Length: 173
Image 1: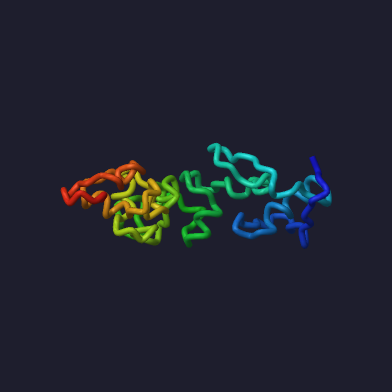
Image 2: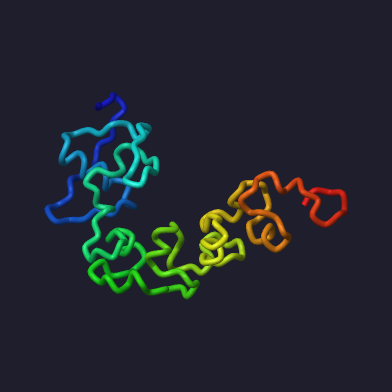
């Protein structure tokens, strides 16, 4: 439904032009060209194909899902990180040498050009193996970095283990 809180695009994309999802006007422009002159408020929430909540207008045109070479990585993501959307072989490469292929980096949501996407001292492969979030230095939100928890016998997925006295000094963590 169109609400009174609308957004207007500056222009419609030219035929064949691909607007990347990182562009704030991409989804709005694509949708306006298909649906009329106005879009619903971005406060309306929709979900993408894997169930991730997104602003309702963010997937109009579905440009971010196009995968020209069929390697499992969307063209927009490949372009963003400097890969070739027409080369399926780049999915198996490991640009940052962290042990995860570019496809695995995409699937994990990590940066294929950074060994440690969140800077917590665990490389992206270690994060993947530990089940921690490669984009959060403190996956469980207990104010203890994931690497510190692993190095000190705590569980980086347990938000309550910061109250454990693992060293016997009668003080938590």
